[in-house]
Image 1: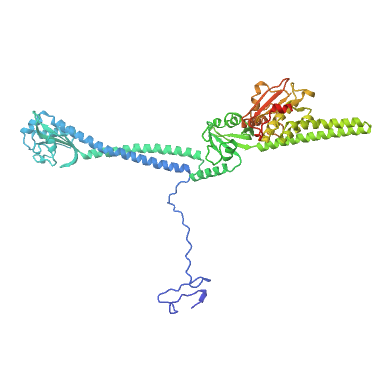
Image 2: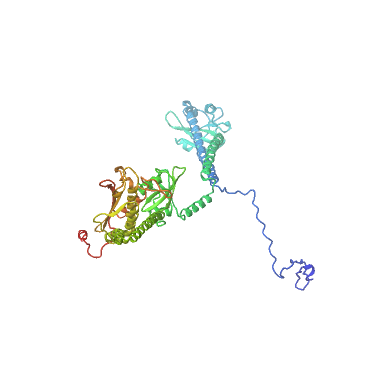
Length: 604
């Protein structure tokens, strides 16, 4: 019946339950005719007896070492016992042969053999038994040339032929062998028996029971096993100690964890925007990431070019402040160094193995922004001062006009405007590049507000187009800034003021070479420091608040000069002060027409 109790009954072909068939019920809501769903698979329970491979690296190393120790011990024991059996057999046959030789050396034995009959109690039998008991042999048999026994441990066998072939001994050869005879398996030695004339008249055969040899081998096994167990114990203790060392060194990590850490480290090192340089205890580079390659100029990252790994950092970078900071000769945090025109901030952290990890940050743009900020502040100060000066001049002009002194007012205006215009016009006539000319005009205004006279040296002319005007702006700007600070710095040798506070700039072109000189009337540079002033981070002045440090301006000047293949030097000036000279080959662009003679230009 269909639908009874909410179930369906599967019928036979005739509409009635088939013979012997059981009704199959379906769950409510199941589709008629659909195959029943298999029962859900039960989760497999872990078998308590199943062995799991250790996950930690130290445990895996310990397991491998234990397997190797057990295998080596078992192999060594087997290799020792295998030849031991052969050695014991060889020793037993040698001993049996010695007994036979001792018996054959009896002078009366040959005569007794020729005179006696092979019966019980003959003289040969008595002599053989005496030797057997004295040597501990299993048997001593004397036979004639026909192989008939004249002696034997079992008297019943006397007068019978021997059970083994005596032909080799009867032919005059000594025989050593392991063989089976009437008394069982034994180690045998056979020697010919000779008469007084040396003729072979028989043979002597001695045997040692093979069970005694086997007993010796069996007795040696416990001793060898004891030695092997002791060696295995030492190996296990060594493996445990080494495993503990590995555990401490690897911090309990597994091989998969170490591989994941290495992958993560590689991804992290090559993705961060800070340079990372790792050194070992000998100062050799063992790791350098992409950013460090770029900052230090060690080849293009991921290009296959040598990155310096494995080389000493001193040989890789050369002497200088950067090398001193990386090797730890100069200690501190956020130390500044220059590399290839870049200003780098370096931090160094020592490691436990005597090496170090250094981070490098590019501060070139920040330093440029800082210098621009300084220039902007100086310009604001100059504009503020000019505003006050302009107000004073306007008040003076207003007073002259109110007093009716019109001619004096005209002269005052002419003098005020003309002095500034004369300085700008003089610079524009002597310097062809607008950036360099604007720099000098701005520096002249700042110098005037500081009470310092900035002027061009006589004969200064640099009219040709420059290859890289920004480089010359950097070089000349740093030199002029240092000169203004030197003239305005307080000290016993500093000028008091007036005409003595002077900065003189010289610009000359010799072919395509630009020669820049900056002379000041400040305290000068002592001869002992004239090489040090160009080193990274060296400065005779204290760092200004809010700035990262000093000692970079002249270092950048030297880097730019070296980039052009030129030179930079400092010397003392006449009357006091210092003269900085920079020579930059190939700084001027190649002229399209004929090169004018500088002497002709000076005479125009």
